[in-house]
Image (cartoon, rainbow, N blue to C red; front, side, top):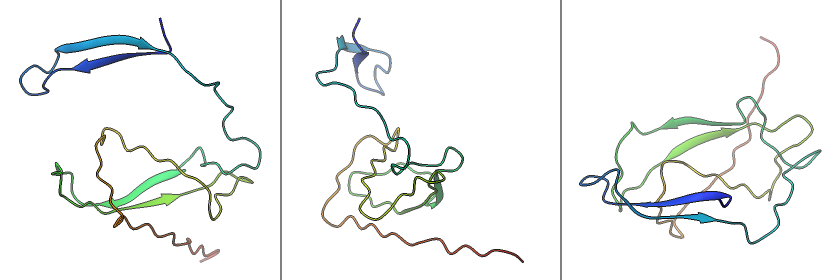
Amino acid sequence: HGVVQLWSLDDIDLNPFGVIEFGPAWLDHEVVEGAYGSDPQFNEVNGFNILSSEPELELSYLSSWQVQIALRAASGANIVQESLLRVFLWPLTQWNLTDICVIACIPHIHSIGG
């Protein structure tokens, strides 16, 4: 039966439920254990939040899109400088990221009290 079932679909406008190909897929590598203990991890509550974005719109191939996100680490499992983060924005599935892609990490200034 495979680990996942892959479906190649037809034209989304003309035949949205048409299947061109279908088949099972298996893993070709051993599955490794995820982060645990003090490894960098997202907090289970609000670990990854989109703070602001342009209004919902359909992006063209040449469009640019700016988005601000907030990350929150799990207690004792800080997300530190040079941590590798892989973020999959779904259903946004097609990207043309050039060397112009700018990422900045700005620490949150937390005030305690009134």
